[in-house]
Length: 278
Image (cartoon, rainbow, N blue to C red; front, side):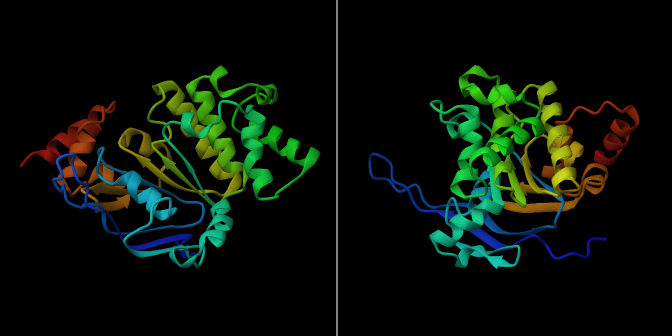
């Protein structure tokens, strides 16, 4: 049983995108992307947020980090109300909350070397200088499974999996407590997905990190998460441990997501089939 205070406590969070207008002036109406969502993440824990495309997962992640401003609700991180912070204070706090996106390309300046990209956050937050900063970059390359000589290369010279490792190293460079992984492995092929997921689990053990792991593939979630929240139409419709969600789903959307996952264990497949029968 978890007895520590939550690292992240989200309460009744709502995000409404304002009305838009077509070229003919027709109002399309406001979009309620996140609708009264609440959850917690404890130190060293991984909460998986799963749901189909358009369910509001990425909007929720951006609202938590205030990359977009929530409409209402409360976001408390490490005892601090994030919505009460002004921009300078939020900038300092972001050192402790980092995000890794699905496509690392737009986040990696093609004119900068890998080492310069990783060092950028270290310099911005004055974590280290000179040779000490260079050594930190080298250790981060080691941690994410890249060679130190890769630091002299440019992003376009590396594979998709290697670029995602760079993005992870950049996030870790500022020594965060929470990392939001927004579909961070879904664009990779199956073998590389497993490698990066194992890397994330190893980094979590070594650094005591907490993750918000956003995905639509429940097969990935089982490898890394301790709890799962299922999101549908902007709401969390089901929440529980991995075993509870996989073995005893209660919401039809959860069952639909599970049905899309191949089951290599015939006994588990048979149990799911029986459970789904009316």
